[in-house]
Amino acid sequence: MLHARLDEGRPGMSTFVMHLQDATRHERIDNVESFVGTDASGSFGVQAGHERLLTSLVFGLARYRAMGEPWQYVAVPRALLYMRDGELYLCARRYFRDADYQRMSAALAAQLREEEEQLKQVRDSLQRMEEAMLKRLWELSRERAV
Image (cartoon, rainbow, N blue to C red; front, side, top):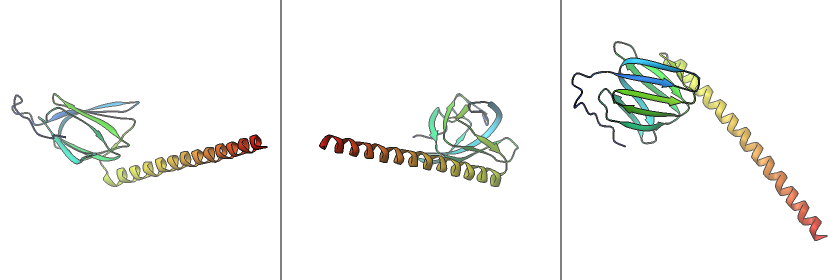
């Protein structure tokens, strides 16, 4: 994936607009100077004038800084990021946004534990179904053998 800056045709451009969107809400954040996220290839940054970009963010924390503001953190279970014409779109099933890194890390850890528990329940259910199916197949084969 190419993460180059292209400032041609956009003299003096130093900020961009960011749109955060999930299933129930949309936030527009103006005057964003920098965005840092992580996709399958690793951590990357986006600044004003960045070329068109489409990538999928992995589970974790991203961060951004609006002009004159401290870093803000965005926790996503996974998200689609699209940069075009000076606007960055981050679309996720859900996201959490906060300026407090510790609070965001704790929220992300809790979400990860919840998703791991749900995954374990699905695995356990599939194993029970498989055992029941194998037992029934064994019973059917015994009935036919008699």
